[in-house]
Image (cartoon, rainbow, N blue to C red):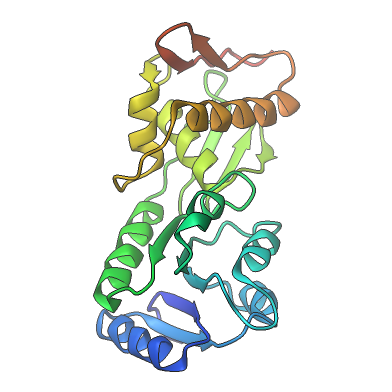
Length: 231
């Protein structure tokens, strides 16, 4: 069995899919192609790829529906491809949790570069000590998080947000710094978007530790993480 990272490319333009496959294989990845939306979720569930390159517009089932279904059981990195620029905010939004996007028409070399960037981001394991001082544990290789030994279901953006907080507990992060942690490219993201991500992350954490306000708002500045010893 190959130890190469397996990339699933879901693209209905067969010529484009095969061209991208060639570039990915030349970069030492294993590649599987699917050309329609039906069956994609089942394939991901059965094969657990390292990353999915997923077209937005597909016959049978579109990419947004596939992404939403996959996020119910997996945090596999997903790079969306689309010619519909107006969809970008939704692709990377709170409900879908795509990790990145590439606008069509694209260069296969650009997609390979994005694949490498995303895989590097999830390759390292960040484990915060699950001691009395820090009940949060993050595993970036699987995008899994636990708090007080309870699973914390996060979108990829929420995971990266929590990772930034856990790396420097007590530090006050400005919204600008958090934007840089959440998005590695230069896209424009509003303060309101960051606030919404923080609000959703805080709500999920409070559902597991209702007696602790772990993420604190610092008026006029930003946010910080304060972890109290568990009783």
